[in-house]
Length: 279
Length: 220
Image 1 (cartoon, helix red, strand yellow):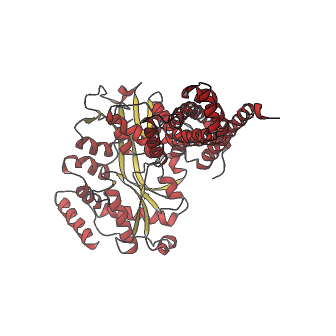
Image 2 (cartoon, one colour; image 1 turned 90 degrees about the vertical axis):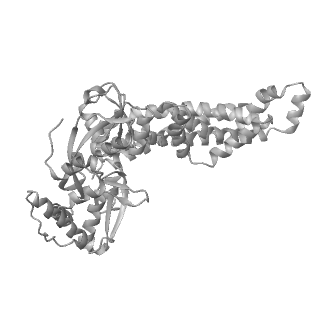
Image 3 (spheres, one colour; image 1 turned 180 degrees about the vertical axis):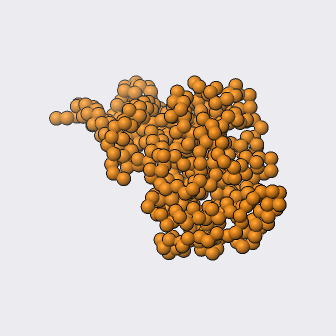
């Protein structure tokens, strides 16, 4: 891991040379809680259908920025990037997986909401994420309000499902379990639009010329690491790890590693710039 | 986290809407699957050429593949072949095809108990194979097959919960959807288990009444 860290520092000094101000000294992490330490490895829940955050590459290996974050925490905690057990979680099962102790933390595109804060503890936010909609290229939907009276495909338990329920309850929804189900349904015309995290949709739209993004941002929220309630020492450790990732400029490096150059600015902003305002 | 009755009360209307959809989709599928069962069993017993082989193949295919795979095939696969069914009809079709295969075997099992002598008697009285099936064999077979037909219908009712996977807002969908928003796991799963139990008990009750009625000629 020292190699990757020094590579990160090199990238940083390059950026610093361009006039960005960073403080790059490695921060000391608090002691690892006994419960985690005794397990001997980090059990982390990540997404496996959310490129570029958490997904599986062509060979079926876990990939993505959030996956790298989890691996980095394992490397700091146990001294080796191999001391990790990654579990594929979905929007719907991630919190039950955490609270059922199948995993010790979630770095799984988890947006901060009051409902979730009731059942899990959140770390500091590590990035923000907005929502957008994907529609067929020739769709008449040009902005958010155009979906009134139409069917919108969304995932059960997603930020968007909650947002539509609270903000546009008249919109007909088709709620599915996975992003691939949702995309399939959109392409088969089972709904007029598919709403999800903008970050996910940008990747799909870039790959699929028959679809386009509506481009109106809404339901912007922070994404944070989720840990079980009443595990303050572990939460502190995670927070300190996130600070260190930021300080060492690892996010920019990971975005560069996982995101193709043409769509990279959006993701770099999400990790490094303040949250924009939107509905 | 303690059991929150007030939460359950607030979600009750949504659960009832889910229940209503469960009842609709299940009732329709039960009726259709029994129709499939009667037709399929008739084809097998009357040994209709070619068609009886098709029925055997259909029954084997359905019984040896997972219902969820069949459901996904109907919902996501068929549109590729040019047949796009709505959520509701995708659900009805998959449950009907699934239960239909079992109903064929249930009714065929009943038909096996119709004695050879009866068949010969019917034919010597000049009944056509079809009239023999309709007037003699089917009524007797249904009486014998009723308990296993009820079993299949109960399984169908419970298996309607698979339809949550394609986003049909039936009872289980409502529970899982709410849980993914509000995380009231115990409340919701407890509620839907009780509701399913009540549904199945109601179905059993009516089936046993029917069984009793149909048995009237044989009671002393």
